Image (cartoon, rainbow, N blue to C red):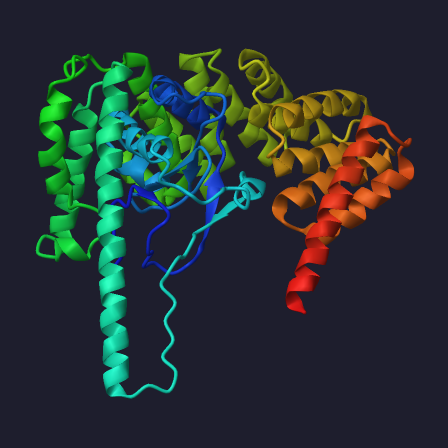
Length: 448
């Protein structure tokens, strides 16, 4: 049975789940929501909103964590489980507590290159080896390991409790109610009870049990002047929309149709069904849902974005250009939306559109260099225009980002061969080639 309770962790503890790949979900509207709901808490933490990221992970468990640097990872299952935006804010506040309190000693340099593609679960454990010992020796060793494990677990429980308190402080200073934090911990306590965790040994856990967290935090959160602060209506609207579209995207489409039946004509239902029908391979039904959305709100950039995406993926790129261009303009060229617009321009197979595709895709990678699909599309348009050197540079950028070091080095060297020496693009290609070659050389040395 799958464990379905939150970890809310700084990943410096013993992790009991098997390693697995977890994909990052990139979505312009979701990322805008995360920025809006976390901005004031980030400032309260003494951090810069420009440097802190909140990233969505495609995983149906209720979890959130930090692994290093200033990035908070939120599982899609947590968004599905949350009842309102304030509950998600409580989780983010806790994770910011880990960051601000310096709990994470691991750098995220190894994760940043994969941002936008995949995130690997980090598995940390206590290595143990018993060599040639008898039963008595093995017993002594096991006892020592158990004592060491107990110390580690006690340490992590203190860190989690500290992050709770620090997160509560950030909520108070940001003028955000702590009701959502308590509501979510109560929800987790119900999950713990549901999965038979009510009678587990609290001293064998990495975190305080959820009921304990509620008892510890309640007085402090209620004493805040922000306790009775009204919910942010605009943020709540964002949350409901994101929750609906996320279910349509990640859940089986028949479940989405159960939760948002066709007789439901709310904005959220149309949104969820648009993604569900699109994923299930019913482009006409998906397009009908997007038309209903646009009829209700003709200039909503995210409704225009999904309509353009559906038209593009249904093989109608020329029809997709209008809504995608308007969505790009309305969001001041959000890099994710602009990338889709650039893709549609290329997909028309009309050479008259290639210059515009190059222009907008360069905007996309300049605003968000951690976007491998944008680099792929930019390389494609360079190739179509006959600029093979810059096509190679775009391939090098993408390969470097995705961890394909050999391809990055080869492509960067090919770019250098075709670019004027000492120009910005040539220097960038040289940087990729040198960095990649150093990585390859280090790997060779370690194997010897």
